[in-house]
Length: 218
Image (cartoon, rainbow, N blue to C red; front, side):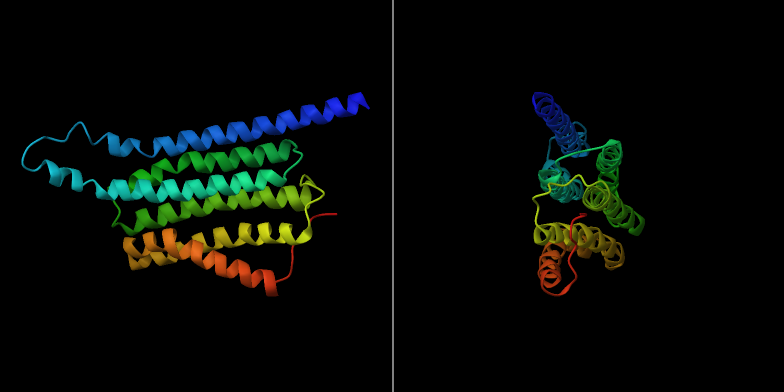
């Protein structure tokens, strides 16, 4: 009995290490997003055109805000996901590392967006990077739920289905934003910040009523 309890405690600590490590990576990545802006401060020259030079940094500031909010949503999704993951295996560890890899990569397309926001390639590259990061979180969830049997056994099918549909809809809508970039950076930013969360909320409600459910693996 004591050996079983000790084993369960050790497994719980191992899961906490995974979550703590992931939280640390998210924190560092979000901090790195501001570096392209701060790098521009030293070259600024005080004088009559100083205010104009500062205002000229708005694309970098906007790309920082967009990425901060999007990565913040990825962190929230990761947090919610691991609220229900009670066990882990080497495959889950690997998937989590791949997911963190995609998150760590995001400061690069963010910097490109801040420097070349009007370029179609930059917008597509940024949207594709967000889509890939979201897909890796989806992979973690469905592996834990359907293949690894790592999810809390007390999780009811309705909640599991809600999380599953959210995991599907988010990358699907981000992939759609690749098409939206054809309308320009204004449309893309509006989609990422406003339309995506609104559309996801509406679609989640519709899926909850009419779409087939995702029962956890029994």
